[in-house]
Amino acid sequence: MQCQVCKKSPATVHLTQIIENQVKKVDLCEACAKEKGVNDPTGFSLADLLLGLGASQKMEEANTATGAEVVCKHCGFTQADFKKSGRLGCSECYHVFADGLDALLKGMHKGTHHRGKVPPSVRKVVNQEARLAKLEAALKAAIAKEDFETAATLRDEIKQAKKALQSA
Amino acid sequence: MNVQDFLISPGEACKRSGPHDKIVLSSRVRLARNLKGAPFPGHAKKAERVKSLDVLLPAVSGLPQLAPKPFAEPLDKLSAQDKQILVERHLISREHAAKGAGSGLVLNAEESFCIMVNEEDHLRMQALRPGLQLKQAWLALDGLDSALQERVEFAFHTQYGYLTACPTNLGTGIRVSAMLHLPGLVLAEQINQIIQAVNKLGLAVRGLYGEGTEALGNIFQVSNQQTLGESESEIVERLNKVLLQVIEHEENARLSQIEKKPKVLLNHIGRAYGILAHAHSISSKETMNLLSLLRLGVDLNLFADLPKALVDELFLLSQPAHLQLRVPDKLDAEQRDSLRADMLRERLRSVQPPDAGKLGAKAE
Image (cartoon, rainbow over all chains, first blue to last red; front, top):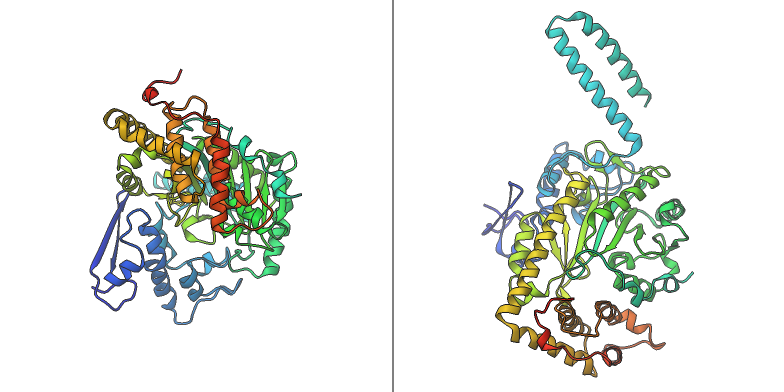
């Protein structure tokens, strides 16, 4: 097994951290483990470590699969910039570098979907989307039951909901 | 307006009190937000940063939550000393203090809100409260954030939530933290166990000035690390629960020290008093560690005429930039140590030594 940082020396330090039943693992060689301060139990967090290596690697793999280096057209940020700083360039970068981002976030956070506060403008859309999904599920159920009368009203409601979403 | 004229004096600032403030010095909630479309400060050119600042500074400073008349200035209007003072007051981060043109600061008169503009993100908004008041701080900041969202549009992604420069802050952009004074756990040598246990819950424990700093004066910062996949109130609630347990452990550690090793405890506190009240040269690190013991002595009712607020004030006044305020000429480290000792002797002159007989006695 190779070290995940330098990819040269064999990995002799194997770290496992369990956060909320999620197991996270990193394999390092001794030199890299020392450099990353793995021996200091107070200042060490696997999430911070993963950000520097596993994460950007995963993104790199996902993004270089297409061959050319990925650049954010909006701000000129590159994959190499991310690897160096661990930060992204602008809000658009999250769309440009989306491939592999989920893998990175999984190692870092409790989930990969936002469950907190939503801006008022978005809340409206989210509510509408939720309503649409509900209507579509009801439509399916109605058709399965061969209740075509209900299905017809639902179909009209869905049409309207879609229109409202588009205008928002 | 000069920021130093705006700030509450250290003496007044330290008189503020809150729940559990024997152990929890302060609570803080921070939200990271970015403008839609504009490059993040770390990747933006100076002109772009100035542009974001020009949008955000008036938008933030006009919020009703910050009335009346907040302090709102670009950082290039502040001297290096001003910024250092703000760091020592825990109002801005060290990273922010290193910034100049293109970054800014908004602070309300109560010092309960402090907003950093163009730190790592366009906005780092903080709500601060004395003692353990995480929920109150979150609710206050939530209100401020909602009001601001009526004026500016933030970068938001339906899956990832609020977008931040660093993926570690993604989603809620929230960092909930409390500053804890844990001399009991340090003396009982249980602190590492506690730190490890807290780490296992996915929370970070750091030193006095945040990331990568030493735990001087037995002061530790506990904060959440994960920001995505959980709601803000869940994060606040989780940290609150953990903190209540740490408080209990600290209280127990103090009690067991009183019971099992009263001499050791009295020796530490008595020596701390002796050195602080009589030294002629003392480093900042030694001062903080001894003031921590003095504060413990106050908590244990060993001092008849030493208010906790004075200890906290001395803690602040011992910091390098606060000391420098007392004299016009630039101090070197040696002069600072001597000036610090003079200040401490002067302020502790009328304080009587600890009364060993009071150890363990309940406060009236």
